[in-house]
Image 1 (cartoon, rainbow, N blue to C red):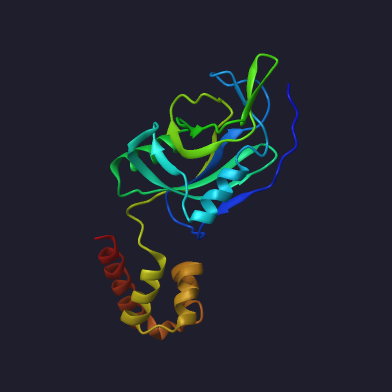
Image 2 (cartoon, rainbow, N blue to C red):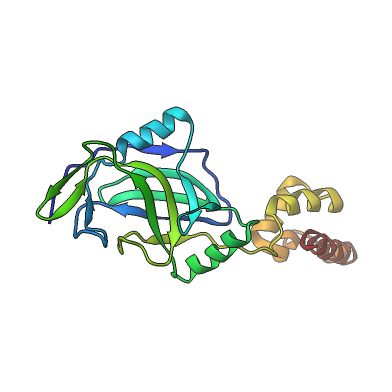
Length: 222
């Protein structure tokens, strides 16, 4: 087993918290050779990530290494002691990306890198090719990775029928005449939280509010 020293580097774009986001290791360092007989050394991605950062570009996020089939974007790539940590976001309006998301949630997909090796970027050690420098072009979601340790470790859930909470907040405030504090109380604690300070003689008014809430929810789901 080879041991190496890691060089920290990071490629990061605007952060977001959106459905379809996932995280995993696109590649791992050291260990046993992959199915192609390669071992990747820590720091191998450093120059490539720096070049992407300087150019304002990023590796492609592809389906099965198909350049004609992008399924999203990478939002962060970072070397850790384990390997290349990759955080991506699937474009769920794309049918293949939506299918990939479902497969990721069932732990049916892994990650695989598409790259080239510059002159002097590799050497042979004990019968294996050690990659010391890699030009990273793309990272794909695949069913059978060359490196079995290149796994997806987390996937953000996606509910296409769930109303957007900010849209609901605005609609509830405008349609019901609630204060911002009342809307937040409704969202955090539900109906009981909204009415806990109300008096019994407001029951007719509260019933009208309940009916309007149901209508707003139905409109947001449409």
